[in-house]
Amino acid sequence: MEEFIDKFNYVLVVILMMTGLWSMLAQNNLIKKCIGMAIFQTGIILFFISIGAKNNALIPILTETANHTYNDPNVNEVTNPLTQILMLTAIVVGVATLGVGLALAQKVHQQNDSFDEDEILNNQTK
Picture 1 (cartoon, rainbow, N blue to C red):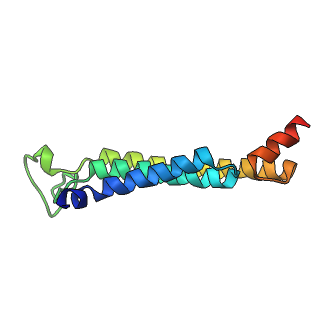
Picture 2 (spheres, helix red, strand yellow):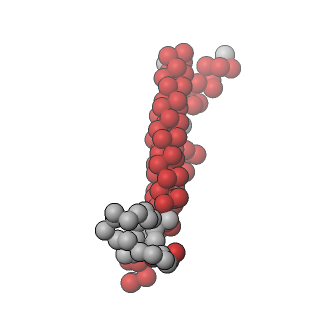
Picture 3 (cartoon, rainbow, N blue to C red):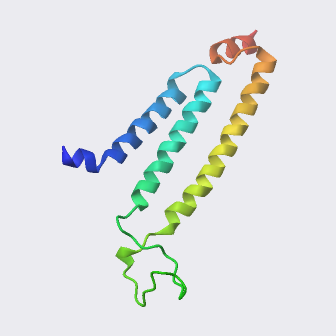
């Protein structure tokens, strides 16, 4: 049980990713697909943040005025800022992707009066 508690964040990430993937694949509504994409992206971001986290790690700022000055830092004791920086970028890209997806869904709804994929495809073949 203790191992489950230690890895709870990974279990949560898998649940989020599978929920988002299911929503993107199984739902016929375009808005639900966009929401599923956002949930899937959130799961991926949480996964990478979980990988980059370290307990009791120091921040990677090496200045003389900082309260935690150290001459020769141990790499294992310093947080890697790369995962955090990349995930900030991923959040911005995810918001932009969601915005474009919702704008396209709105345009499709204006032309077909429906968000349902089956109805849209039936309207296109007529």
